[in-house]
Image 1: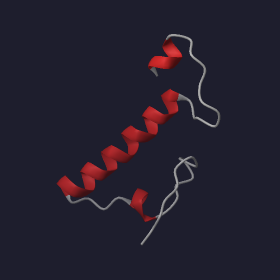
Image 2 (image 1 turned 135 degrees about the vertical axis):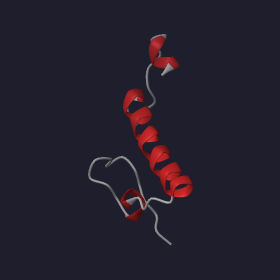
Image 3 (image 1 turned 90 degrees about the vertical axis):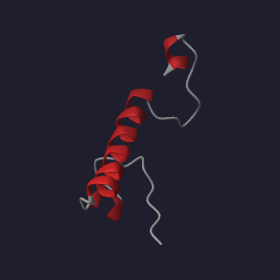
Length: 59
């Protein structure tokens, strides 16, 4: 986000910084809800159509 703010070009293939931040917030929130609150989070069961940029690797 800082590079974009000062006018530097994004790296080829990079997603928009605002979108990356939104995805990070979604996954961190789901992680902490699952680990600290004991709530099942379907976000970790496989790919999410809302976040096609994210690759999920299941064991």
